[in-house]
Image (cartoon, rainbow, N blue to C red):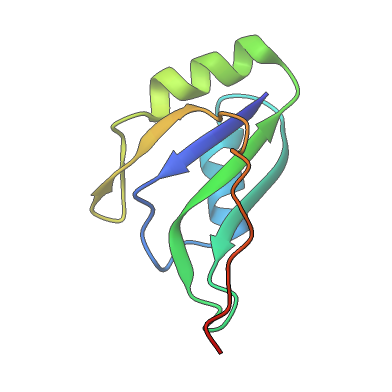
Length: 90
């Protein structure tokens, strides 16, 4: 199950995110989404957990939890919506 994690502190790493969710079950992958040009965190990421029960427990435990002074927003990730390609104004 893929989990969306929002309102992340800018200083958090993929490993920090994995460790936080690892307390609630086996984490397959944890990734912070970064801006392509600056490389800076966009303030959200995704965690993939193999077991759906563990993932649901992690969502319950981590939603609203504080991390580095910020309250996390955690829920099951929705499929990415298709968007039309960007038009260049060059």
